[in-house]
Image (cartoon, rainbow, N blue to C red; front, side):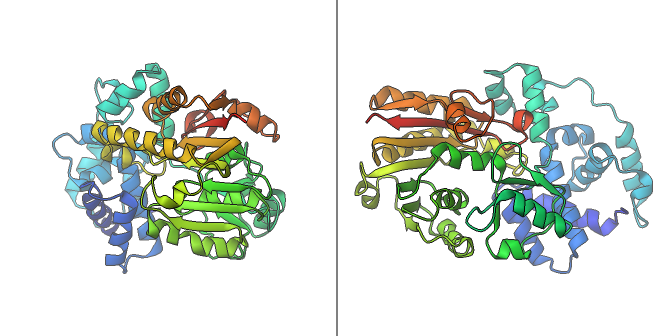
Length: 419
């Protein structure tokens, strides 16, 4: 594909806005595309790919560019060194300055680099990871996080099973295969646009990472139960829980954001579920939460977290997060888990999960909770999944990484309240 000067200009302009790190990269790009409606589909795809590509490899590219780290130079360096673009693929209209820089960057040596730079991570994050894994493991994890994520779908079992979904998509020319772990997962080849596909519009599938799907199977809700998705967000996991309950019982979707929960409504309508009850709460101590104390069979806490397990999709997070923000999050996570636990009735199940890789958001939160709550006991995540025919080596607590499982990074602990 030939790259044009206009595409480089658009990508460097979008990147400049993203690198202020005032807002998430995806929302900045959405605003950018709204402001520049004249950009065609191919141009938009190039801009998005370039911005995310530079965010993934920012430290390496800045080192290569040296003092000339303008956003234009960063985009050109990304093409030259990460994408392997040739000079011939740069279309007509490039200045000698651009082509000279491009050629020079192709052959420039990186020199000696430390672990954080080699991993394209901020120093503080490389240090946190090094505290519990060796340098080679950090590099392997970082390399997996610096690759774009594949696209996974989740079949809606109320409409059709996973194999039928695979067959129908293949018949429509969509390359795909069953997922490795989740009985409902379908992995796509490439990233086809499926928002207008009849099977999406009729609720036969949703887009959901395979790792995220496993959280629903850890909670394992049954027909007729009372279930709470405590931090429901836009409701991806809520929809899975409702389907696993076979559209029976009562499923509460709690969230503090009315805007996020608002996105759940059209998804529920497509899914055919009628057992979901979205509830906007003021905080984890909302009176509507307290009224359900001791009455709920199963509670999922997919806690707000650093999101560092999702760097394949959100590479800007590694540059936007900080140790200070992390300290605030861990306080919030402990409070949310403590509040959610009060809902669980004797014999009930509580699943605490994050899309973080850091022990302070994961094992440390669970260990402190168990020390303060003798009524709860840990249950093996691996055994819970094995009993449902899901074979995955994940141990007592679920640890998923893109390096080990080719999913987003997830942590989950299964806890049960003594009967």
